[in-house]
Image (cartoon, rainbow, N blue to C red; front, top):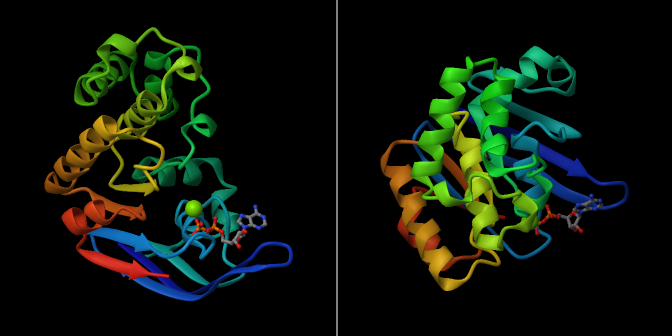
Length: 213
Ligand SMILES: Nc1ncnc2c1ncn2[C@@H]1O[C@H](COP(=O)(O)OP(=O)(O)O)[C@@H](O)[C@H]1O
Ligand SMILES: [Mg+2]
């Protein structure tokens, strides 16, 4: 489903990724691990089509993902529907006036009917157990609440692949446990997941493949 072949990437001066190759099958959970600065977030951004390798190729469902293709709005939209990215910092992901608009944003962008958008919003509010947050502005929520809303926003588009960058970072014990259980449920429902994490418990309980960078 995902194929990275000899990927290299450099920021202005520093080389962040060197010759990374990785194959991911549908339904697998892949844990990306490695010390701070080893390039996990950079690799996830490449997989999400936000940046592009300076060398090497990235294929999603057999199609090479290039800068040129991602500049095509129709292609980019379809791609982001299939592959949802939960950023490490939820603040960069949340921008609407309230939680229900935030969760409905993706489905509206997809051109679904208002009825279908409404249904997806309700389903995601239930799934993440955040009904009581629906009218709240996202920027006033706690860290754990923001993380739940950010995940709901991605799941409302029903992506085939879910990419999470250090999802447990900064969460208190209760939110952490809740999210760990939630990710286990997603895994057993057959979602393909790619998770960058330092969390040993998350790794042990979810891994199909561990990729050490
Ligand atoms: N926007 C950026 N500009 C320049 N260098 C960056 C940028 N983002 C990350 N880097 C550098 O690239 C390397 C990999 O970073 P990153 O992918 O964030 O690693 P990780 O997620 O594993 O901690 C680090 O050396 C980091 O300093
Ligand atoms: Mg990172």
